[in-house]
Image 1 (cartoon, rainbow, N blue to C red):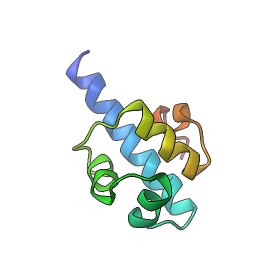
Image 2 (tube, rainbow, N blue to C red):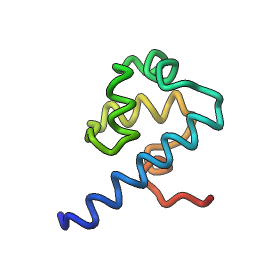
Image 3 (cartoon, helix red, strand yellow):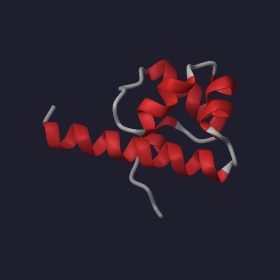
Image 4 (cartoon, one colour):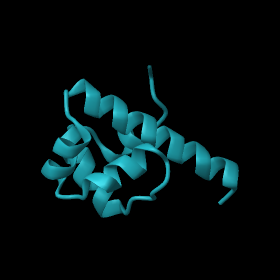
Length: 77
């Protein structure tokens, strides 16, 4: 995959997770707890350091009440 495209998806994912999390009034810790993932992983995803697995993306999307494609798609805001 082209590095530029890869970085774009990481940025989009980071932006969308933060937006949906804040829209629901969830702290990183609460999101992580409800999704059964480590809080540091949520932080690393939001800082574009970690690359979550499909399982993690699904867990986060369920808590955030959005689809995985919403997390990876271009932000409308």
